[in-house]
Length: 381
Image 1 (tube, rainbow, N blue to C red):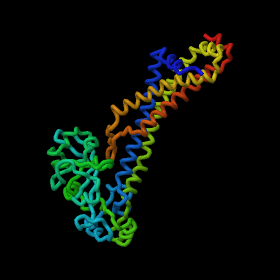
Image 2: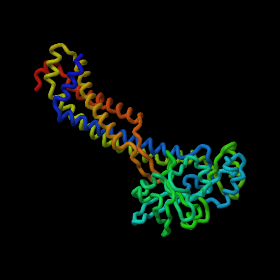
Image 3: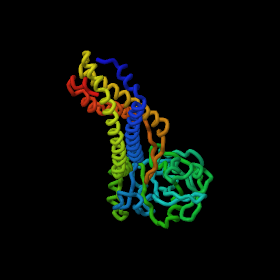
Image 4: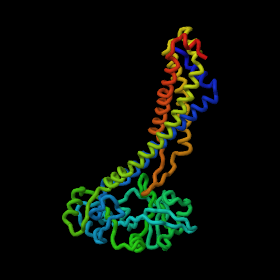
């Protein structure tokens, strides 16, 4: 077998071609790593947004969208009678909420689409992962923003700081709090008093009622909705609702993969052409090595080593760029925002792609150059 140093020496013998191979493989690996991180980030934030111990009561026929749902304002008090609900300070954990997708304006005139949630303090009883980072819970004329809301609105972070003012339907709301809810879509929402949102949107009904279970099971709440036909309700696990949203956004995630693969394919074909040119110019060298006793298999392994060294170096460069520049970057989408995370799984995927590029990409040109008879290779050039 030829030593590894022979492959490395041949790789760096032409610096321009070597740089082209490394940059091309880095582009392919980085694109696929970004696509994987984007898919995982969007799927994770949707799936983890719903608690399996929370049940959403929606208007019948509105199971696909909370925003289209209409629920009577009396339902929270009636639903509180369901036995086995979680209790906080002796009161059942029941939250009546209004969900509204509206246009928010800042003091400098910038506008952005935001998902607003009208809530009362009971919302903290059912959404236990919400933490107040700064300020206090909103009262009338006030609002509380998620820590990622400025990404969703495409505002500067300072425009949604405590003490700033936002405008909804020609009404000013003072920001009095900032909250987080790690790994959920709520981090990109704007929360305000439920009475304010009902008034500003000219509604007389809630969007949903969320109840937190303790001894009760989902079937108990489902039976309640079937017994109270006058309320026209359906029960849906909060986790199931967001799982449906994850399936709804699956085509968007697939489009990211398709775009990444198409762009990567162009880079791969460019790399194949470079390898064909690099190996074809050395056919006489391959013949001479065979003449002194090296077998074609040893030459093939050496060429695969040479190609893999370039592509793995490119994969390392892609991982470095991903960790340094893209890890933690927040991506907004229609109902929230999520962050790209280049964790160990994504980095391992990048290394595997780099190795695969080196082997799969180099095998066809290497085989094409090594297949001719020895006499043919010695006369080449």
